[in-house]
Image 1 (tube, protein in one colour):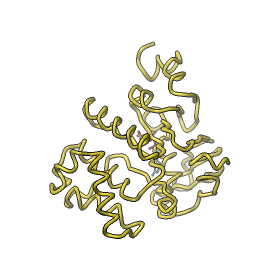
Image 2 (spheres, rainbow, N blue to C red):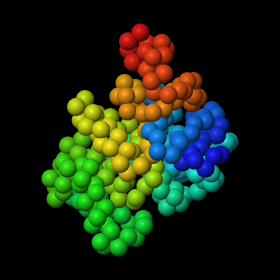
Image 3 (spheres, rainbow, N blue to C red):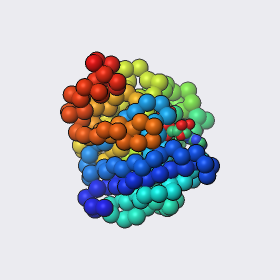
Image 4 (cartoon, rainbow, N blue to C red):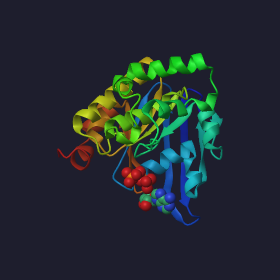
Amino acid sequence: AAAANVIDVASIEVIYNHVILVLKGVSLTVPEGSIVALLGANGAGKSTTLKSISNLLLAERGEVTKGQIHCRGERVDGLSPNDLVKRGVIQVMEGRHCFGHLTVEENLLTGAFIHGGKRRQIADDLEKVYHYFPRLKVRRASQAGYTSGGEQQMTAIGRALMSRPNTILLDEPSMGLAPQLVEEIFEIVKNLNEQEKVSILLAEQNTNVALRYAHYGYILENGRVVLDGDAASLRENEDVKEFYLGIG
Ligand code: ATP
């Protein structure tokens, strides 16, 4: 596993509850500084792949039973989610998962505990989040549960940023959002990638938007990678056009 790759997944199999085989040999790499999209229909195994890396699988009785996962050349499968966060790899879960009764700002601050930063550093990080997400600054004192779906997605990404990640695993950021908001969120993700040098692995059912922002893509079907390539070549692929972009 090359150290220049922030993430290297090699032929992993994942089983839930000791019996349900969901990933049947998935391999992928996230080169440092890139945006990589994991595409595929509902149930293809995108979330499971992200959770295998962050090891949030643990909480769902899932297990990597074959293959290996490396992070910057270091073996990480079997480590705890906290160990991954300490290595700078954090997952933003599907469905946003804000603490609804806390304010937006309190939600963001919960992301800072992992590195136990100094008050001054945390304040700087918060300003950085507000720089990328100006809407969150406006809504900082609102209860997160009463903010819009788009604002909750931004809060979830902002909270992840507070842990000072080098890699974000982003699960279905477009889910349930109006097209204009989806675009707004992807623009911010692109800015984070370019300006903060955060590498991104994102799972998306919205192939169109994902392939406009990602550098590289993998298509999952039924727990296997059936196609991968740089985003431009995938956009031109006849099967992708027909089955995933609806323009064949
Ligand atoms: P979605 O967009 O619905 O999240 P996905 O591509 O991310 O789709 P996964 O959520 O990874 O797919 O699910 C892949 C398969 O694993 C599905 O058949 C699903 O039913 C199954 N699965 C997911 N989580 C569990 C679990 N905790 N226990 C058992 N089976 C699970």
